[in-house]
Image 1 (cartoon, rainbow, N blue to C red):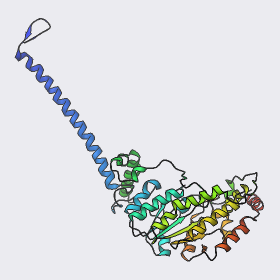
Image 2: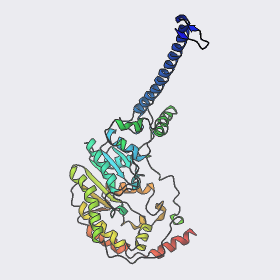
Image 3: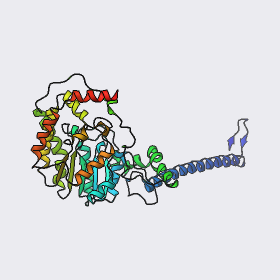
Image 4: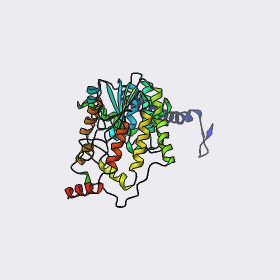
Length: 383
């Protein structure tokens, strides 16, 4: 028997109520713990279930017909589009492709297309995305891709954005926790899609996806153009190191696609930057170098039968009309429509037969254009 503090002893019967009370407390604690644990696990399971079913980035399946989807955040959603959508053509590239409309492309080219732009992308990123798309979709036979003119002479692995959702680009289910239990994706993706569905909103179309053409005013880009004062002497061309860099960029990123997928036709185009881009090149003494880089890339691409290549720099009315641009490179959506119309009927296509004539025009016009007079005239109009 136990002894009480006053020296008296407790009988077995006296101890039983205390023990019973302690057992009851333990039982309540266990019940509360398991209830709480069950609620937590149940909540997590429910969130995961909703995320997998709605799947705002199409990581697991194609869009469901009963749900409205908002297409946004290119680097999160494009791979899902590649793997799960039904298409036989793709528009891809940097921000130069964001204003393209797949409805126009399909009407002109007789395709069923998707659009996968990557703002600020280098050639390596675009190449890797295209390779995955072509691997997953054997029906992909037409690709429209811009070759950023200012990206020809970059390192082959150049990238503007280092932060990347790699968990969406592999087959590892364990790191999918970063997707299915991601608070930001849950609220901005999953719940937002459900809200759009409940309010009767339509899914984002590929015409609308990443398009910004109607979101800006284009009255006069001279208001934001900061022209360099000093002028660097014109370089005679690329250095040997630069030539190696240009070729490495192509041979590691573009050529493998052309050789690996010979049955796919690649429509490449040099996006038509404004004359202010050339003004910057003239100030930096880089026009001859830029033209040499173009010539090298063009020579290489035209050696492949599954390539069609376009350049719109001969359309000087387009290039010199600053109302067509948001800044010195980015053009309005009407220009995207114009580019599709031209490419569909072979306008401004570079071929082995006209390449020399094209390059002669480029040197004659852009090396001898009166940039000072043009900028002065545009500045006076702004004032």
